[in-house]
Image (cartoon, rainbow, N blue to C red):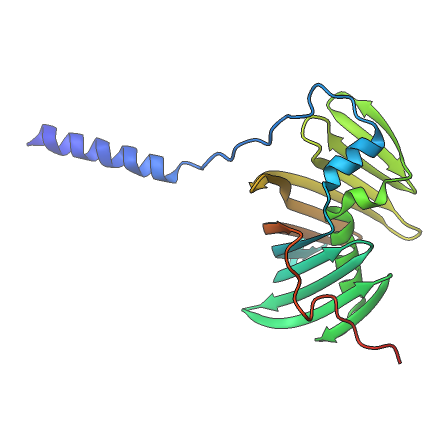
Length: 226
């Protein structure tokens, strides 16, 4: 009886440990390991015929390393420079805004200059290849390093996924870190972004990133110019 009970407890413990063990995500394929790419080749392959992307995200916002806000968001990004972001809290739409040609259009919710900062830096982080076509590139070990117009990005030479990026403007220094690469039907992307802007840190979890999805009637729609 004791032997049977002991075996049952051991078996239960094994099942518990197995269930609690983290699931290891497969690593992105190192398909470019033996190639030495030019800048044009790298940007073309990284962009991979992408016209627009749709991201479903969780965004944690901290100010001075203290919790500030938490939102869910649907983000549409389209070149050149378009962002349409719908922000939700507790399942309710609290912000709906579009950025077009560096101009902010708030469709619903309170207007806030931080919306433009967040939307613009999400564009720079996700559509990173769109800003380096006039840059210069060199290799450093396992990385390509590209510099252009006060911007610098590190790209993994084997996977062409971004590792980190810094952007300098007249009044701020923006830092972006990338991690947790995942695969969506052959489309690999970093599912975790950390964006540091002034006193704020935006931790962006990309729960889903869709390549060239069908757009709706009201996507990227802005008010008529008066």
